[in-house]
Length: 302
Image (cartoon, rainbow, N blue to C red):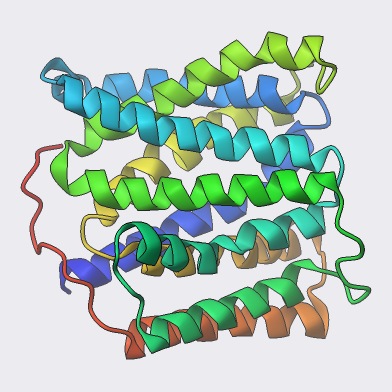
């Protein structure tokens, strides 16, 4: 199995982890405000990554710190803008708008990196986007756009830049140092914004330490952050940002499957058709699309 296939499977596994945490986070947010939860999640993840990659952090240099800080800024921006938007729009609309990154990434990649995605990559991205619409949006449709939708759309731009920047910097820097820095910056910014959100009445900080909160914080910090983002940084050395965006469209598919298994929620014909289209989009991009040029072995240590 070559590195490209390993990387794509690893990125699909990231989508599985993030999708599977949906139920945990949803339950936890009944007892904790969003940014308090995020501060705990990324704070604990920073500690875990510091222990895991302590050897790599000893030799961290200024360029790695700057690269990680830039990536961390867009990671934080994605979470922050999406959270603000969710105050004014529905989860289904937010999920679909966030999914538009599947087409936003190749557009930005072409504009900034001057690398055009091929026909089959575009076909896969559009199929995945249509699938996300059927999977996340009720039959009644999106309805009128509001300011919350615009905030979520802005978060999608941030997530697209996050994918592009990870793809740009990951071959040049240590996986451990780059992952630690972006997560630490996100943790720091989340903590700094907590009082600002309180003062502006966007969100009052609150938490009640229940079992669901504790489990969700630990699982998302270790599994969905420390492990998953480490995998992403490593895997993006060997595949293109456009492929990453398409593979990440699996997240709502795995979220729906997790809800079905754990909560008994039914997908229905519309949801199943959406999931099938997402999978079709991935197959088109993987089997028909060009093989992105990527090194077969990393040149930077862990």
